[in-house]
Length: 267
Image 1 (spheres, rainbow, N blue to C red):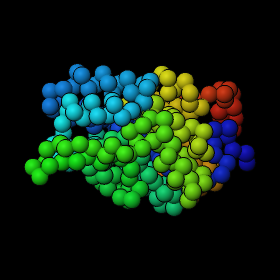
Image 2: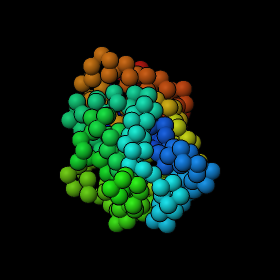
Image 3: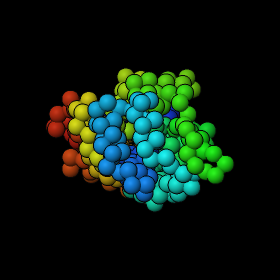
């Protein structure tokens, strides 16, 4: 039986997730900025970076200087991330792990918070990449990891994904921002995610763009047809939920005509 045009023909070995706005419904720096009374200035900079320019070192430094996050705030943010995780994110990660696929979080977010969130999602610590932050002995903000590639939109995630591909030739990447789509030509498949925030310039460049909040819609795009039959009954129900969402327009599929999305019984 032939696979559909949107269905992977070969299994991928690794999945790269963005964090803020993809695995969770928060933009972490904006969340803390609101706590510290700087939300109006910081949110505008974040929106510009996510929609058009991507992250850069100057922007990164300026936002942190405005917000000056305390160590305790970043630890708490990790738990807020988890409480605001995208529907089915944890279940999808467990499916990938059970199918022996490596799961990574690659984020321009702040490492103390992203690490806590990732660990709660059961992503191995060594598979979590983000920008570290420095504190003084009282937990006050004292700078950030200025040499991190992740503060540079046009090379950060490309550099990390290139490293990952040395061990995982077939990689799928899902993310919501301008600094995610820079890996488009490196990965086996890039999937844009607009479930939390629709970003027009990202959507226009994506062959596959998810418009639903639930990550169940991502599952059919990440597995081969044969892998479907390896799923448990519950996992198949999530897959089929994703298929139903696709059928209802939950994924924008570029260069695929409507009559070739589903040309036969789904499974």
